[in-house]
Image (cartoon, rainbow, N blue to C red; front, side, top):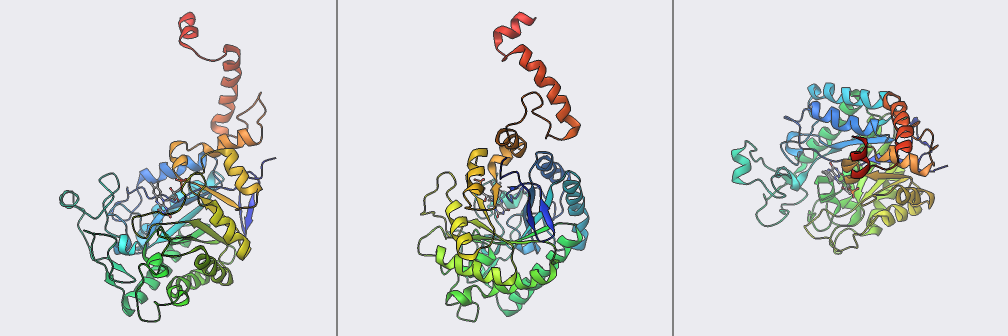
Length: 386
Ligand SMILES: Cc1cc2nc3c(=O)[nH]c(=O)nc-3n(C[C@H](O)[C@H](O)[C@H](O)COP(=O)(O)O)c2cc1C
């Protein structure tokens, strides 16, 4: 029996398996509102058997968007569309989660299919106009990027309020898991990293001070998010540059998160600066999930180039992490979880689609019997049948 396909209980929520769709921005929202695209996109993963589906980085304010196409939860009117997605995911047996975020210095970027940098004249001609971006310090992501304004006390107070309000809206929309985005060089990561935080007030300086804002926000979210629902935090376990956040820093951060009542540490890496100086092969971030789990005894989620069911199974059976997030492989194959279960639980060859959605699993079982009679398709067999 596959461990990946045993349920995981977190507070009052039971995930049907340990496969998670990693949060992935789609850049298809209109003024932060989800569209039918999002319902279909996330619905595919629910039908595809994933246990937890984490909706993409959803901005807590308009200026906290990475692009003009980001989803948002800064307005009560945005709850309804999100609620319809959460309801559908639950109806299919999946657990709906949502990541809330502020992009900080990496706000106001191009939509990735137009480029991977600051807005150009062409983007502006398409209607994507720039806004003022903010960060821990007035340091741009790179040459040619907008120089962010250093968040002042009023700005920090607003960001805290925005996160709290977005969490309340996520709850109203019916999500069961809330994830705070502290990774990838976005606003809260810009406070954590010594490369981007050069403040001289109580939010900058040594590690304890750099952690202050992310921890304040986490405490507020834990108060808002009900006791029976889990709170996740995604962090960049190491910065791309070895001069930045180290695994020791992240363990110290995760220990503080554990005291606050965070339930899962989602272990990613990089995003500050444009370089990545660490090994980046298959499962390259799993060791971060393992180290943080060992040091904190908190459940962790591993992510990053996990592409194969056996690879995912090994992550949980070895005890390196409790959850496995699948990103790009889920985009390529939204039925990844259904297929993984067939393989890992050695599906009955007579009825291999019994665990697929009942609307079509029984039909595929019938077709399977027929295909076995016919043998593998080839151009020659197709010709002889005509
Ligand atoms: C299209 C796309 C959008 C992404 N958006 C987000 C996001 O909204 N929040 C986040 O934390 N990570 C985001 N990521 C990173 C993924 O969640 C994941 O960590 C990364 O792709 C590595 O996992 P993979 O190798 O399985 O794809 C995104 C990745 C992709 C490919």
